[in-house]
Amino acid sequence: MKGKLKIVDFDDVLKRDDDAKECKEVYVNDVRDKLQTFFTDGYDLGEPSYLDKLNGIFSWRKGFLYCFSGYPQSGKSEFINYGMLLRAKHYSDRVVMYSPESNTYELITNLARSYIGKNVNPEFDNICTEDEYNNALDFIQNHFVFLENEEELPSVAGLLNTFERLSNKGFGCFVIDPMNWLVESNVGETNLYNYLKVSLTNLKMFAKNFDTIVCYIEHPKTPSPVRGVIPKATAFSLAGGTMHFNKVDCMCLLHRMTQQDIEDKLSKGELLQQTLDNKQNNINFVEFETVKMKSQRLNGKLGSALLEYDFITGRFK
Image (cartoon, rainbow, N blue to C red; front, side, top):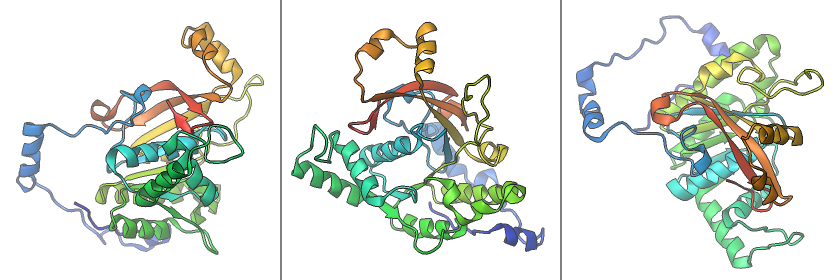
């Protein structure tokens, strides 16, 4: 059941009395009926992503806040876009996309391309038919809405007010790509910790109270080379430090494989040469790593998998 959300900003927290809001008391008998269903039917498991290579290390769960990170061009946006398309296809989810860095027309056509598995631009080969294109647009119309900025950047509170309104219209997945396009993100290094503490709490409470999936992208800090090599992003290299890791339910890192990375995996037997030999130039290898997952017994253990991203279809496998 969807709840209510009291959205606060950092100034509200500073001005509020400590005793302004008490916690709600819950006793076993208050929720015994719900608890009984766990015994008879079992506790809900995380929902599969429909990317077979991620089975066991990643799943979707309503009420969770997800963070995706990785260096530029690592496939973060592409993964979330395709992941949301699979949610719409397999779970009939309706998705809200706040992707201010993307051109909305291009984002829609990219989703259509992934839905069809063919190009939609006549400048390329393997073009879909007009009927296929319109069927894809109909699917996106029925399952997606796209938020665009007007004169000013939105605040977290303003964006969550929009999310709440759209949740009441039946939307259940919410994407922020990226987090640094919200107005509070320019608070500076000194206040960033407190900004994230409040903002991420608000996002998590929205996901929990409205039984939705909330995803956001956060970029890592600019890395310093180690012996001339850029190290992989980690759970603690995100802008804002450990607060992301502390607050989210699931954190995933994406790393686009370089030729050196591929050769290293070949030498260790983690990648077979025949896998490379059978691939065309349109394939990129992306390492997907789950570095935090709450309730791992139900939702997947920590681990990594090597995904293939096809530029032509816009799909991962």
